[in-house]
Every structure is written in structure tokens, then in C-alpha cells.
Image (cartoon, rainbow, N blue to C red; front, side, top):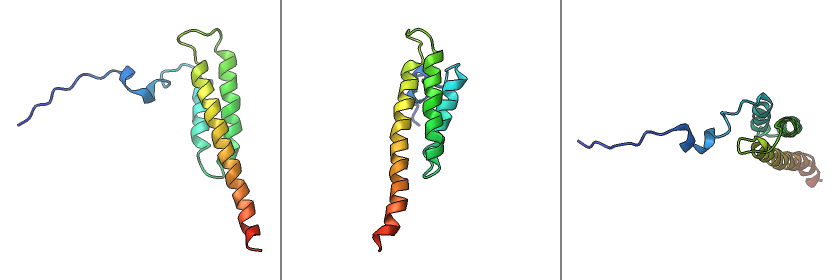
Length: 102
């Protein structure tokens, strides 16, 4: 039938694995905390941990060079702050909605 030639893909072709090759366990824990913070109402617990671990990764990363983990850690901090604000909004809604019926 048809034979489709495919190009061999390397790990560099996948944008989702760019930071998985990191050797920093602090950064990996920060990423895990960021993912866990997406759980509604429970995420308010994990967001501060994600921010703290990302800040620790920035402090431990040393001088800025091309292989620096600082940009990845900065993305985790920004993502954690956004998720924390969304979680605060969810908690606020949990408080305000029952009061609206009065």
C-alpha cells in the first residue's frame, strides 16, 4: 500500500521534554508541586511549595549560562503564582456563594 517515510525524532524535537533532562531534583520537585497545585481547593497547599522550591532552584543554579535552569524555574514561579491566584479565587467563591442566597 502506502509507505510513509518518517524522520527519526530526537529528544530535542519535543518541547515537553525540554526540562525533564534537568539534573536538579529541587527543580523536579518544584514541577511536581506545580502539577499537584492544579487540583481544585487542594492546590492552595502546593502552590507555596512550588514557588519556594523554584526559588531554591534559582539560588542553587549558580551563574547564568545557556544550560542554566533559571528560565525554567522562573516559568514555574510564574505558573505557581497564577495557580495560587486561581485557587484563592476558588476559595473566595466557596465562601461568597452561600452568602448570596441570603
